[in-house]
Every structure is written in C-alpha cells, then in structure tokens.
Length: 357
Image 1 (cartoon, one colour):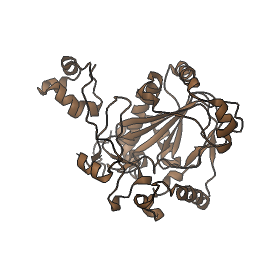
Image 2: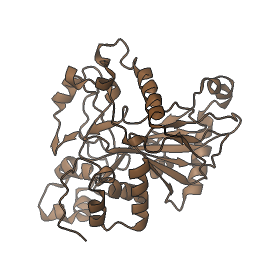
Image 3: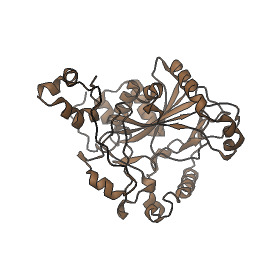
Image 4: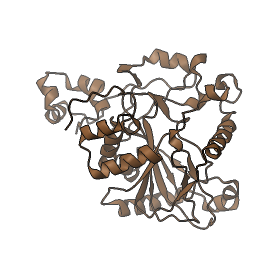
C-alpha cells in the first residue's frame, strides 16, 4: 500500500479525481472495484449485478405490495400518450424491502470506495412502468458543495427490453461542466415560477449532446442488474412502446457525507438564495447536517437563504428504544472516553451511522 500519497483534492470524488491512479492504488482496490471505477470515470456509468442474495424474493414482494397503489388503466389511457410515468417516492420510510435495497451494505461500501466518503441514501423512487423521462442530469436537482458527490443506482426488478421503457444514457456526458442558472443567464429568484426556465436546460442538454457527437446507449437490463451513474451523466427513459407491459424498477439517489446539499435549478447564491436540502439518511433514519469544509452551516444561515421554503432544521432525536448501556457496549471507544452516551449519539453517533441496538 502506498501510504505516502496525500490527496491534494479531497473535495473531488476519488472516481473523478485527476489523482485516480494514486488514490485507488492506495486503497488496494480489488479488480472488480477498479473495473467499476474505470467505467464510472470514463463513461459516467457502470453496470453491476445487485449484491443481494434475497433480491428475487424482495423484488416480488415490492411488486406485490405496490401494485395496488397505481392506476394502470389511467396511465395507459392518458398518461402514456403524454410520455408520463408513475412512481412512489421515498417508500424506504415505510417499506423494509425498499429500504434494504437502498441501504444495501455492499452497495454502500462500493460507493465509499468509489467516492472516498460515506454514501448516504436519501431518496428512493419505485416505478411500475417506464419513466419516459426527457434526457436530463441529476446535478441541477441534487447538487452539493463540493460538487459531484452524488450518484444514482437504478436496479431492474424485472427484465427490461426495447418495448417496456429501457433506460437511455449518453456515455461521457458526465465530463461536461456542471452548468447552472448563472451559465444560463437566468435568476430563478425573480421568476413567478422558480423553475420556469427548465426548458432551457432541456434545450442545452440536447445541444451539448449534438455538439459532442455522443450517441445514446440503451440499457436492456435483466432482472437484478443495476446501473450506477454519476450526477452529471445525461440520461432518461426511452418511450415504452408497449403500454400493456410493466417495467418495475427502483432508483436510489445517494449523497456523500461532509457536504452542503442544495438544488441548483432554484438557487441563486449571488442573489442571496440557496435552496438547501434537508436530507435524511435511509440507512439510519437521521437528518444529515450541511457541512462546508468540516464546519456545519448554521441553521440561521440556511433559514435566511430560503425564507418560507424550508421547514425548521430538524435536530436528531433519541430513538424511543435507545439504551445507553447497549450503546456503550456497541461503541467501546465512547465508553473509554467516559462520554455521555445520549449526548454522543445525538452529536456524533447518528451522523456516523453508529450502531445503537
């Protein structure tokens, strides 16, 4: 292991760093991790088999439980023609199988190796049919400071082909600069509808693809295959040509720790408005703080930046079944420091993902 290398750019994801070779040599990364890392670095995406021995059973339970939530007749009669899809957002909060896919330990460990920071699953979307969504990136919706510490993991809960709404993406498009409102010459804060300029982004992305001469790739996934993509990769959902079919899938969006989380499409920092995100870690259930270069952003700063648009910043609360003695037993370093278990958990443990039961 090369222990002498000191990363001069800790604010850049390892997988996108100009010091990629040094960082991954230092990790002594396995060949499989290197394969995924190189694909993500070069193409902006990587394909893996989802690492869950119970995946098939879990997928069938999700489909069975969620089927009744959707009006398939309405979708086929009206929404399909409009290129709309159907979804359930953040089912991880109430469904154990969705939460298990989102917080899969092997996925979290892989993302840690790729990005160099602990991964935080903060949003899930469950789809029964193809999204038919226009080509876009995630970066204008889910960005952070430092940038690019965000990714998505989509997994097929059934086989996907050319007729039931396959994913479509543009290899290498993640290397485009992250263009936001200032580059578009718009100020969302002065618009009656803050997202009124979104069509300009759609037009920009089409022109960037055309200018770069990038051809789309369609992912005909078999059940259990997953796609990891970088935040700036341009992607979308192809037309579902057969509306009688389903296309069950789940996507989990991940941030990484020690960042400031915000939404660029409705943010104008120079105008004094940043739409901070209050994200909750699906693997722990706790709200993540916004951290800038190791320092937590004060709640007053957040509230001033987005008046009437942000609920009071939630501080962690002790779980109802929190047992101080068990916490100390599971975390001997806390016991050795003679720290108060409850205070330590609220200040550090919940953010670090420490075990408490």
